[in-house]
Length: 362
Image: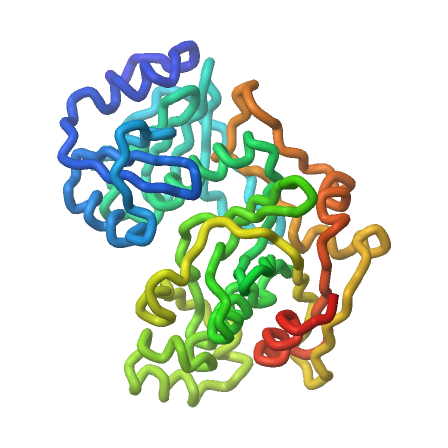
């Protein structure tokens, strides 16, 4: 696209074609995310191989993908338009993204990396230094699946999730409460992993179904050193160094590691859908009081709603087809009417919480 080409009145496929037309495909990858078949094409073989390794439990071969995503490894493209700044989420201060809506799509630019994402209609394009920012391509793939699922009568939750036999447990909590850490402790008790941070929930007859995204948990060192199943993620020297830290310092240390679920817990322990029976809300504090798990009624506890409600965000675009997901608290309450809701209060004790949430009587 030349520097003087306006994009305000262009179709999203025209924009994508002008950015991507000079790049030839070098490979592709097909994924089955539940019943959604996604094909990722790219001019970069190394990127395809990195994505293949990341999404390995969900790699398939298909002739008719539901969604096609193109990832172009190149210099960040020029966007000849004024972009709108995406205001930071509550509690955050850093501006990360800016965007523009055009006739039938949206273009999002990551300010730090220069990565650009164009989507709408049947167009899904990631372009820029993709290989150096493969995590952003992973997120884009997952966001395309989230949008597809939300158009099918699901509601978005800020929650992790695990599956235990016939039970599905969603784990939510206010910021920094340890959703991922609790889900991994529950995996150590035989649960399978469903999702780390985003969960779609839908009514399925007389029960609820939950749908996760294939995003590996990202955890801090404190989670690793306190869970024997994660010990292979660090060297003995690293574990000793972290154990020597003051507990409060270790708790607050932000140094993220991706959990290789297959290496730590075994093959076949990652699912993407399961019936949902329980919602756990972490509302505890770091003190010496006993950990307590109680069943609650959300109609009487509106203060807990922000722990799991989630806005659809910048990478969701309603195109007029399918269902527009609700963000009304009353609709969340109605959806969860038949679901057991547990509040975890008192002091932080992941071992006790994991046992109590799995054993809590109906």
